[in-house]
Structures are given as C-alpha cells and as structure tokens.
Image 1: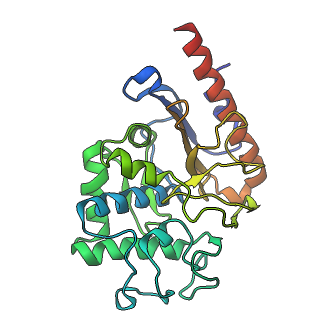
Image 2: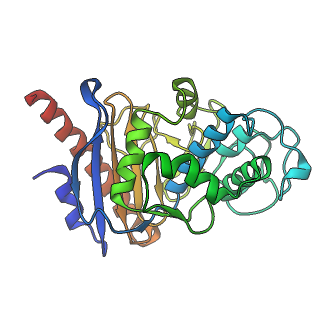
Length: 291
C-alpha cells in the first residue's frame, strides 16, 4: 500500500493529497497523488502561509518593511508601540485569535491570531494601493500558474484551491523562485526565538517556534507532522481539515485537502496526518534507495 492510499479511508466526504519532491537537486515534481486533483477545497489556515509569502514578496519589492514600526494611524485595530509586520506574521504581536485589542505584551507570547494576519494584508493594500486579492493574484497565483486558487474573504482562512494548484505552491516552498534564498531562509526561520504559545486544536508548547506565516515543527510533541519529519519542517494545518508541510532536509512536501471541519475529528485528524506524513517519507526514502 502506498502512503497516499490511506487518505481514501479517512472519515471525510472528500479528500485529496499529493507528495512533491525535489531530491537529488532536481526541480520539484509531483511524486504521487490521490483523489480529485481539480476539486476546490477551502484551505482554511493554510491561507496564512500564502499571505506570509505574499508579504515577503511585497517586502522584497520595497512596498512594506518587515521591521519598521507600524503607524497606529495605518492600523484598523489597536496595536502596541513598536509592532512590526514581522510581529504580525509570526503571531507575536499580542493580538488575540480574533479581536481588536492586544491581550499580551509585544513579542512575549505566541498568540495565534487571525487579526494579525488580516492586518498584515491590510498594510499591503495600504502601501501598494492594490486590493490584497489582486496583489495576491499578481504576486503568487499568476506566476505559479495557480489558476484555480482564489481568495473569498479573510486572508487568514478564506482561500480556496485545488490539489493541482497546491502542488505548484509546494514546489515554490521547496525551491523558491518568487523570493530570494535569503528571504526564504527568513521565512522559515524561528522568529522571536524561545517564546511559548498555544496552537488551537493541538496544545501549548514551550517553546512554540514559528516562521513568517508558517509553523515550524521544532521539537513539538505530539504533533500533526510525522515522527520522521525533521525539526526544520514548516507548514500549516487548517480548520477545514487541511494540512501541508515541507521538510527542507529531504526537499519534499506533502499536502492533504479535505472538506470535513477539523473540530469534528480533530484528535483523529492529527493522528492520521502524522501517520500519513511518516508513510510519505518512507515512500520517498524507498524510491530514492531504488533509484
């Protein structure tokens, strides 16, 4: 049985998954898929990683700064003095999950915040003069050929996409073309090192490492990625029953999309995602040994 065959037995109405790899210096390519690759799924919080990548493109273009304090007048919510785009993308602004007023000090705790990601998108619109959905399309979807992906609301959780499109995104996350290697390294580096935090549906971790829009596996346990995944693995899971990761040590990634809400099968989903992740890595290692 291949790793992805497991997805066909998940307790979800519809599911699709893919493994993408760029082993041995090759360009990223699809290794295996399962399910309807053209069906649109809500990405939920996988959207946050895409918004983070969009912000880094805007930063490289000079439209925004990761580290200059945000002008309070440019913010639609209350923020601490000294709050930066880096704080927002790394969930270190003190802003709550949903809400307009900080509930913790700046850079003190990792508070998973839809509000922070939404504010990051607002800043891009304010500084470029381009609506965020248009900037997103021009910066990421069109260059990568993600023709079936769209934003239907909050940039924190309301993007929709297909498995075909998400394999293109995984290829970019494995081997970046839209941002420089230095910016990519910043994207997946731990921000505000050592702070603790809670991941909704998973638990509290101390430390709780995070990049600029992507969760870092680190030493978290238990975790939704596999035991075979390296600590440098980065990615996200979402409330729509979705997940994706990239492990830089093996230049490979996995994405799984479903249409069953995470809170209906959360504990089971985490266990199944972890099992799938380990099986996917095993398949990749077996194929490499045979090549």
